[in-house]
Length: 156
Image (cartoon, rainbow, N blue to C red; front, side):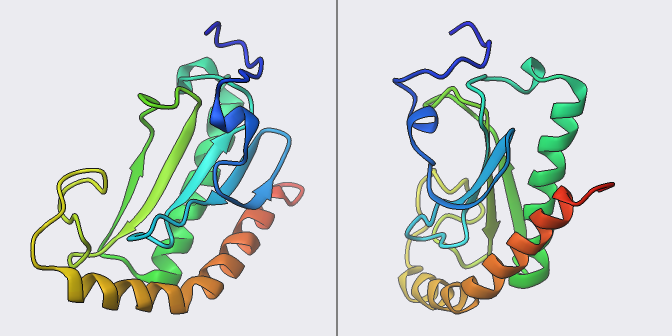
């Protein structure tokens, strides 16, 4: 990959949204990934096909991180997780994107990464947490769209 931002037709983030679209601008879009155990799992995806943060100019890096932090702040304000994980790997899909994942001590993988080995004996707690988050998901999505729109306001 040249890293020049040219769409790669083999890339799922160039050919699809990467989740349920919540907001889109010329440079980036935000999607709800809605992973089964993590219903508020959100992705911030840079639209151009680049793999690394260092391939962006300073202004674009700042813009992308403002969006990532707005998602994190919204998760903290609405969902009150014990921790928010921010991750940008690109090992499987080498297209610049950030995972913003609210975490609770009783989730299926805590304190391990959500892609790690699941903890034993948490099924009841996981189901209760999933229901709790699902009940708050409409409020989270509404607040997230408001927060992203504030970023798009002139002078933001």
